[in-house]
Amino acid sequence: AQKITQTQPGMFVQEKEAVTLDCTYDTSDPSYGLFWYKQPSSGEMIFLIYQGSYDQQNATEGRYSLNFQKARKSANLVISASQLGDSAMYFCAMREDTDKLIFGTGTRLQVFP
Amino acid sequence: EPEVTQTPSHQVTQMGQEVILRCVPISNHLYFYWYRQILGQKVEFLVSFYNNEISEKSEIFDDQFSVERPDGSNFTLKIRSTKLEDSAMYFCASSEGAGRYQPQHFGDGTRLSIL
Image 1: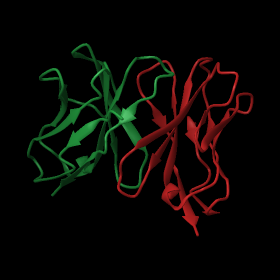
Image 2 (image 1 turned 30 degrees about the vertical axis):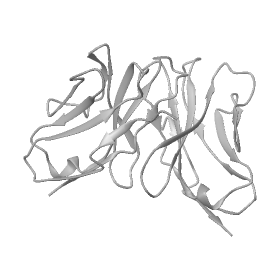
Image 3 (image 1 turned 60 degrees about the vertical axis):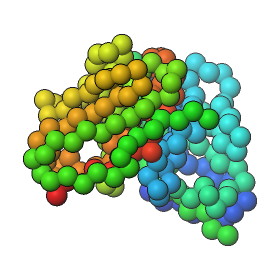
């Protein structure tokens, strides 16, 4: 079974609108971290936001927020007020009781004017 | 803002040759990682490194690969006898701590092309 599932291969959003990128995860470990990364077409991997499994509040970082629903095992990324520069691949990742981040397959977001 | 630096940004190598990918982690970070991303595929963990030794490695990280921290700032990945299937983007990452809530900060990557 996939540990991280991103079901949206591609998403479109108009500039200034909000968009939600979906991520579901599978773990039996009660303690884990969830992370979102942005990969522009130039290839670098930029850390955006993280959520700990015991965090009571949803994480926020500027225009990024994480809609964490533990019972549903989902950790969706919400980008508010989209900008053209937000066009990129977005990866959800999880870390359990090991060193490695487990990545999903990514969602390609395109922001249009 | 401090960042992870990787060199070169692009490396082209003949099959069978050895290649060394270099990384300078964020200066106060103690934990270092290598990942790779084959074109169009997921990012995959290769190895983690702490206190001058490997702390975890994946099944991809076989005897062809090695890592080293030759001095106080650099962290290298060596790939011996490269194969066509080693062509990928290689990312170095570092984190301040080891906990599962610690973000790993990635460099810009080295695109390795094996001919």
